[in-house]
Image 1 (cartoon, rainbow, N blue to C red):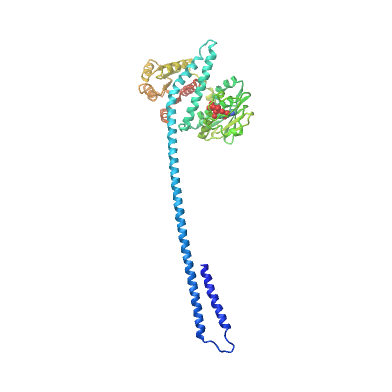
Image 2: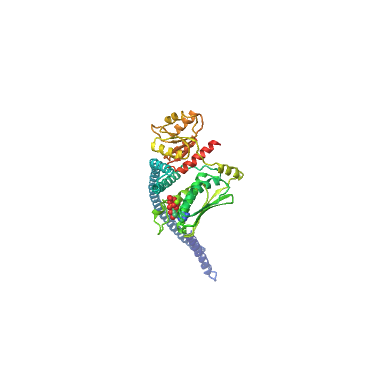
Length: 476
Ligand SMILES: Nc1ncnc2c1ncn2[C@@H]1O[C@H](COP(=O)(O)OP(=O)(O)OP(=O)(O)O)[C@@H](O)[C@H]1O
Ligand SMILES: [Mg+2]
C-alpha cells in the first residue's frame, strides 16, 4: 500500500508542477495561449499519472500474490515437518508404553514369585527357629552351648533377611493397610526395651528408653516395625557408647528420637541410605561383617509414607546419628493411666492355657509342642482339622487358642478348620493363622474371619507376644 500512496503523491506533484509552470508561462502582454492547449496538457498529465498509478498498483498486487504463495508453500512445508515429528513421537511413545507394560508384568511376576517362594523358603526356616528356641531351654553340655548359640545367631540372621525381603515385597505390593487407632506408646516401647536391652548389653553398649505416657493415634505394629529397624541400626553401627530413645511432646506430636554415639553418616550418604540395598561403603568394615542387606531404612521409608508421618535424620561421621519420627498425639490423653496401667499390669503368661496346633508338617508340630510346653501351656497337636477335633473332644475344656497352618493336606485350609472349631464349640476361640503366603487375598480373608495372620518364619519371641496378647484379651 505504501507504493500506491507514493504513486498518488508523484502524480499529484506532477500536476501541481504543471499548473505552476502553466501559470508561470502566461505572457504578460496578454496574448494568452488558446485554452484547448492547456486542456490537452492537463488531460495528458492526468492520463500519464493514471497509467503510472495503475502500473505500480498492479505490480504491487503481483508482488503480494507472490509473497502469499511463498508463505503458503512455507506453511505446507512446516506442517509436513511437524506431522513427521509427531509420527516419530508417537512411535517413541508406543515403544515406551511397551517397555512400561513389560516392566509392570515383570514386577507382578516378581511379587507372585516372592509370594510362592517365600512359603517354601519359610517352612524349614520356621521349623528351625522353633527347634532352636526349644533347644535353649534344655540343660546342654557346656561344650554345646556356644554351638547352639552360633546356630541361633545364624538362624536369626537368615530370619531377619527373609523377614526384610518379605516386608519390602508386601509393602511394594501394597498389601499392608495401616490400622489407625489410639494406643499407649509405652506398650510399643516396653516391647522394644525387652527385645533390645540384651543385644545392646551383649555389645557393651548402654541402652536406655525414656518412656512416655502419651497416647498416640497410629498403627502400633507399623510404628513398632519402624522403631525396631532404627534401634537395630543404632546398635549395629555403634561400636562404643550409648543408644537412647527419647520421647518429646510438641505441636500435637510425639517425637520419638533414636540417638546413638556410633559411626555416623556423611551428608552425602544421608541422601541415599533410604534406598533399597544401599549400604555405606566403609574401608575398615566389609559388607559381610554388617550382615545386613540394606533394606531396613527402605522399609522404614515406605512405612513412614504409609503412615504419613515425618522422619528426620541428623548425623555426622564419627559423631553419632539421631533418627526421629513424629506421631500424631491422640485428641484425648485422658486414657493414659487406665490404658497404660492395664497393659502394664498384664503379666504375660501361657500358664495352663490349652492350645491346639494344627499343621501337616510333623516337624513343625514337634517343635511347636516343645516351645509351647516350655511356656507352660497344655498342647494338643494334629495334622488335620478332623484329627484335632477328635482329640479335643476328649477334653472337658474348650481350647483357649488355635494355631493353624493355612495350607494343610487334602486341600484343607486353615480358615475353614478354625471356623469348624468355632462352630463345633459354639465359641469364638482366639486363633492364629500361620502362613508363608503373602497374597493380599489371604490377608483380607484372615481379617474377615477375625484371625491373627502371622507369616513364616516366626520368631519365638513374636509368637509368645501374640499368644500372651490374645490370651489376655480373651480373659477380659
Ligand atoms: N544409626 C546409624 N549409624 C550409622 N550408619 C547407619 C545408621 N543407620 C543406617 N546406617 C547406614 O545406612 C545403611 C542402610 O541402612 P539399612 O538399615 O537400610 O541397611 P542395613 O542395616 O545395612 O541392612 P538391613 O537393615 O537390611 O539388615 C547402613 O548400611 C549403614 O551404612
Ligand atoms: Mg538396618
